Length: 284
Length: 271
Image 1 (tube, each protein chain N blue to C red):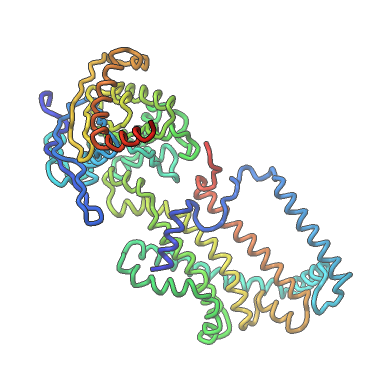
Image 2 (cartoon, rainbow over the protein chains, first blue to last red):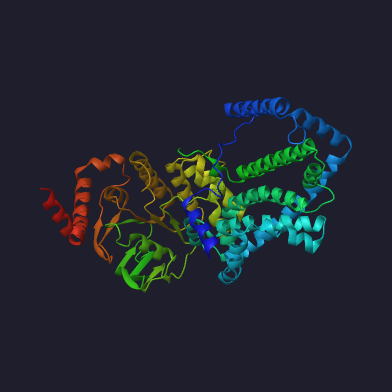
């Protein structure tokens, strides 16, 4: 059971779920920290360099487009309604896939944590599919389900389900034994152990799995659309590239970047709400 | 009930199987605890103190022998006993109040009454106003207070305490000891307190049970005849020091027997 075992080992080592370093406690967010201003400044400098590089050095719209051209193109695509349509299409694929994969991942993870037999049967598949880049199966899924919503959702499900499943399982399997003892000494039934100790204890892990799933799911949407689509941000990128419209390509990339940042931050917000003790700075 | 024991342990034996090897942890332990008594169990580390407490709570089963509470044999955790763990073991996702009602919640008692009782107990352990705080916002001493309040909300007759102050700094520990005595006086519970701090055992107890090294047996019972209520200054009286010396010698004997040779050899090398 290599993958799950490894996962367990690494979880025991590190107290925090998933890989991300614990951010500072949110606190009242109207007071922005220097980190924010430095980050903003960094982005502004990059924007200037981008604009300058495109105008002064490359100066070939086939390979590179200045930021101003990208913004102009964004306005144009927005005005025609094309951009909104692409965004809605991609968002729909992502949302459906993400919800299905989350439900499936949490459910299977729970069953695996509850039954050793099930775990032993499912584990080789999880190990295999988790370690192979499942995105490689995207063309196959397109072949099976055709170009459109179904196949794109299927790709998203495929890439999102494993991090959710593995984190759910790891969270449930790593319940603090001291807490279990406390509940047992009060005479808790197995059902109560699950509902009062194991599941709430695993929630932060599950949300960490969802966070990984969000990032992977976005990649999944784009890749699925690159293999064949009639609309969507991936389609916008592919179409722009094929018509040598570099500015249009960047529009797709920038919107995806923004979507990635926003969605991951949203999940982090949920994480901090649900498990504030995990984000506490050490020391009393 | 006055003549009898609230909790009675008879010829209790416990062995564990570890890597194909049988490890005998407790051998033929017999003692009784009277109602309202405060009894400490001391002994060198690894003498099975914690195992004994877990047997008393019914978290594990004995290999042979029996534990009885009010004449009824213990076969698992029961509502008349509550365990205070060494680690404060609070649920990090619950507030102080939420943690405190865990017991009644699991035992499916009336939650409204349980919440009122929890509020009272939070006040009793000196945490009034902290009900809505989360464990990570509290100090170690405060968390241990919650731990104690949580055990008390199931209204147990017998409190089983496993080195609850071991992780606290010296000053906090002293304050908690005094607080525990106050709470014990106010609630009249029967307390069995495991510790490796001899002065803690003497200060708190009516009786101290000294255990041998593994396999743990009852080596000697020491009645502590210091008057109550005891202030912390009692620790500086000659009587107190006599008690701690006596218990320390009993434990020292044990430790010497088990590791004495190694110690002497090491001392010889260093001189």
